[in-house]
Image (cartoon, rainbow, N blue to C red; front, side, top):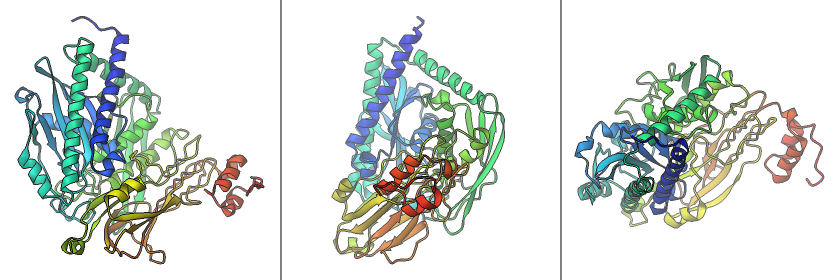
Length: 555
């Protein structure tokens, strides 16, 4: 076999990254559901013949991307390559094989070139509704939560499985959106397959083996070098999170060795009877993402850079949930794992790890009431996402109204109001919600949502940071906790559960702020003046925490 020069391999690697990004954009452009086309709740990737992820689209969430990296291997264990045909596409939404809950459909398509399978393309996105109790935390097991589809063939040699599509439509309150989103996923796979085949023809490649070896070996070496720069040791940390009825402990033991990092969730609370449990694949996805944001952050995400990281947990703990426990809102706690991990890692790298942030998305599934459907009103199922503030970084402020770790873009007002009978009547940053510090935590939001007509709304809440604020680091202050209520004079509500919003009252969400970093007296006076001028902090906060800052005459 002729050896390919390294410069040419690097060019092909860059081209592959462009292929997967085009693949991801095809999914977003074709999708029906706002959470996909407006918020980017997806993943897309290219895999070699062994099922190793070679490249992922930049657009997407770690919960989808890093679970996809393992899900392709799961599907390949069920379906033999020699039986695959051009135009076949396989899928599942099994939470323990795919992406952690039923609402995520994961597809995999074999890529044929010169009449043989040379690799695979895969993608994941969120479907609005799959029956059952739907996107809420109140199921007693996974069977309450909707329709589970085991690994199967969605498309057979180019022909869509009509019966499967009928079943999905028949088990949804949003059948048209679900059907459209499934076809968008199919288009995503087909785009990846077509572009990769074209790339192989252009570069005169018969297979992906040389490129795959180069990508994986180079990424692994770079990651091992980055791990070697972290002090060896065993680091322990635990955090308290809201839970459903009572607080839950998330605990971790991080072991850093010369050539690997092991994260163990030993000490974490057992599973909940409610749907906030997290399959290990999803908890792993966010934990490893958090580590990779600090360790080898400039190395592309693929099988090589993921290989040195391993995550384990006692079966039955809430971060290693076993079937058939309910898992619909697994993101509530799964997205808190980066703060857990960073509590360990800051002991080894105190000047590189940010403060705690809001972390968990303020994910708000909303749908019609049973009476609305019976009385002929507009039936709908919609999922909105809003973000709090990120933790301050060692050298910068946190980001306001920004999703970390998920990366999901917040729901936009106009597209939301166009597809459902709701109004977003107010949306603004929360003054003083970011923790004080040399570098200030990112700020949360104040959002008000109301019915656009005479019908009540059902809202399925499962958020975090209502009981426990995001903590600062190295002298930084905590962010403000989240707050939820119905009506301006309504009582504060717990972070999880199903609530009914009367047609004449708004649902008020106040998302949490991130923690600050460093002592407040070290903050630049000019930054304090700017914050007061822009209204992100009050004059009272400035005088209390930043008395060294001269008063800005403009305020």
